[in-house]
Length: 332
Image 1 (cartoon, rainbow, N blue to C red):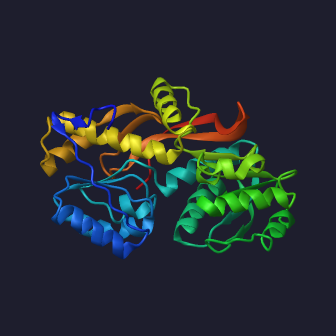
Image 2: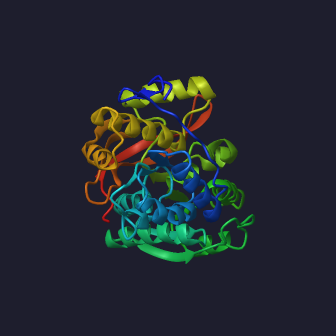
């Protein structure tokens, strides 16, 4: 919005921020306030899938666009899809299934699978497993430690005993940091490859994970090291402001602003819901992550997925891109 001067489609953009506190009840209260009191034309966020599902039913009949910029739960663009719902982030399927196929076909015919024991972890594991098995892979063992676990010592020996040359892990946030650190501390890193969803070693987690993350390979829709000109401009500006490489979450926000601005440019500032929906279906542009457009049926983003490996570059841990899996469309 700073780049745009706070305007799009010839109109000023006003941003109102509310904190859902990762609570479905609070999230629904805040969204009702944003619609009924503030008259917002676009609702963006949230990160939590529990909040996203809680507000989706209300927003389905609201006179706005719900642009999901975080939550990946598949149902939002499948069973719970709505004409005014669009997702510009990624789905659980996109973050796991394409990588599952790639890993099975490239160097890793057998893995042990570990994922946090909650709905998001199981959805991610199921997406990976279906694609991996279909591509000829073998899963030696499946392990589901509690979400928010502090100690993985009861699970790490089982990963070693499984006898697989690689582990595929779905963890996010603090869980990811603790798992990656303990995976190295217990000696597994020296002889078992660490694979996973990109959130496992995303740019926000890498400073805390340190050397333990080096060599991990993951799949995700973004890497700060992507060489395209749009990403170079974005990553350089972001680093200049925050003194760190952008994470996928930073890119989520940047792309959301681009979507809103480009939509309003098409409608020339008209916020009639039907016109906004038609305009968003037309969008095609180059985002920092690469080519971006919406599926006209599901309204989920169609995008590249990248296989990445953590390495040190100029003293900073980053994800370098090993392979590009182009044009990935959630099956809906």
